[in-house]
Amino acid sequence: MAQKFLVRDFFAENEEVSAGFYMEHREINMHSHEFWEISYVYEGRGTHYFEDGRTEAIRKNELVFVSPDVSHCITSPPPGRGSWVRVCNLLLTQDYMEKIIRRLQPVRELDEYSLKDMVCRKTPFCIHFRDDSGSVYHLLMTAAHEYRHFSACSREMIGNSVVSLLMYLMRQYERMVWNERV
Image 1 (spheres, rainbow, N blue to C red):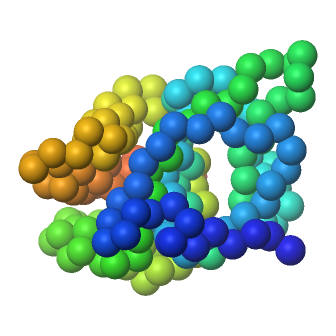
Image 2 (image 1 turned 45 degrees about the vertical axis):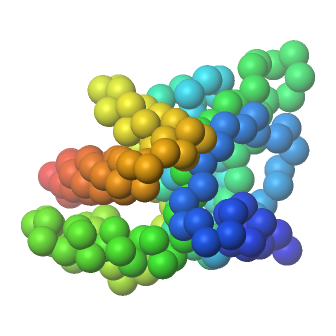
């Protein structure tokens, strides 16, 4: 059975956002969490395991967006077969995502299969994105930097970065779904 990570395990008291930089394990550590997770691979390559048994190679400049209660894990290759997978994680509580969803409500979407609708309906999902433009890297690193160097305007900067990131991901998902349908 997969381990379940709780808000209290990763968030400081009264905080709705957590960010960090990690080296992923070499062993399979299936887990779920009661919060949203955005993981960006900024170095290395490895394997992403999904709850349904699928695996997918993951490498630098890829992002994984996971809703609460979805079991998954990212692993690094065995020693001698590659570098560690290093990720920047941005974790968001469900309350925080509710606020973000309200900000995203006016954004027009393609159809009922849109990422915005999946987020708003709280449909469980785990999606991979490739970030060849560097946009995701910039937005995530801005949010992670502000989280680590908390200042008076950090909350607003993190919020704006998260909204921009989610809008970008929604558009990328639209393109991905549209290209698969054509």
